[in-house]
Length: 221
Image (cartoon, rainbow, N blue to C red; front, side, top):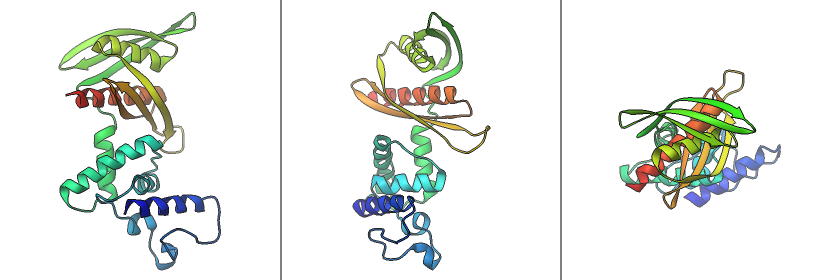
């Protein structure tokens, strides 16, 4: 069940601190002692799974460390698919749901280019977008690059939204690694999360913003 998976995931996380004694709830022995892995062999993702188990699987299998609030929303999305398909989901299934529902969502709005200038402490962004086949260039101003892009998109869409939460991580080690950005906005009286992936951290954050906006626009329908 979800509560069992959450407890096991917390126990496994606690063991990363270097605890020698095996003391994970609901697992009397270490799966490795019998040639198995917890995330791949023991965990089962279905309509009863908890956000902790799903988040643990994404982190261990794919290196994705979801913010707590987003972990819960992804959990609901995964459980909904499992419930509708009446089956357990594999780790690749879970990753596919997360990737297809939250990452680099470029419809109906897509950002093609961004250019920035700075004057008197203010950042201005010139944002080239494509929406419903129409290409536009919109200016926005703010305290930083992401803030100025937000202003440009609000001007373009005629819709107000605010950034509520933001975090980022490197998906791999090294100078050529991709960055993954997580961003939550308040839009149309609700909240919407988006995730962006790009080799450039600024574009990663812009993609996360666009993904959140697009998901918010889709939920409005």
